[in-house]
Image (cartoon, rainbow, N blue to C red; front, side):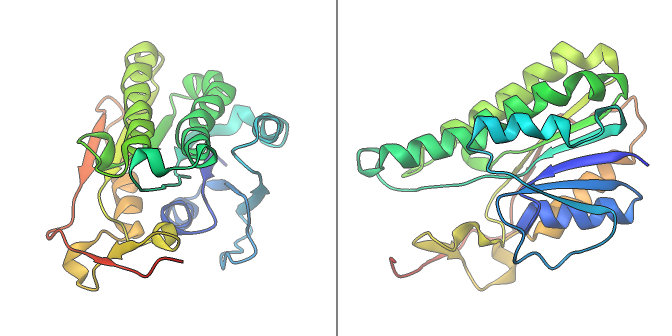
Length: 232
């Protein structure tokens, strides 16, 4: 059975991808800081508790996963803090960079040789904020732009091995990402993407003829509408 490693797998995009890949016959190694609220306990869904902002915890994962069976890596974990840049706390900036950019780079390094040998797939869940100016999200946008550039460069570097690297840049997605923010998707279902939409894109990509690689995918809802939420 092939392994798929998915970060942020306890909810949102990561969980939707985990459920999708289990249905496709993969053994999913899900990585998250906390699985206590995760409602998926399938026997092919292995929960690996890890704080991806702590380097030693990331490094420990290479001893918990059968690397030679690893065919898919989905870097879905992410965090956002939004405010004028001078108002962000330094700890918030550090968390954005560590979780959105540093962790995917380290994880990819740990499993890259095996992914190349297996002609595998790396999916980086970026953001539309990494493609255009992100007002009140300069640090967040920079982290996602960095992740996207990493994916494009890595594909050029490793494509001869058969490795596929795909960046998926969604706009507003209906997840818990907004729980601690002062804005969220509108209640209009035309104004947001569902996590399952992204999982469907990954399924489609995995089923493409192996010699065809989509390197960049941008997803936008039909309408752009947000609503403000009270500050905590």
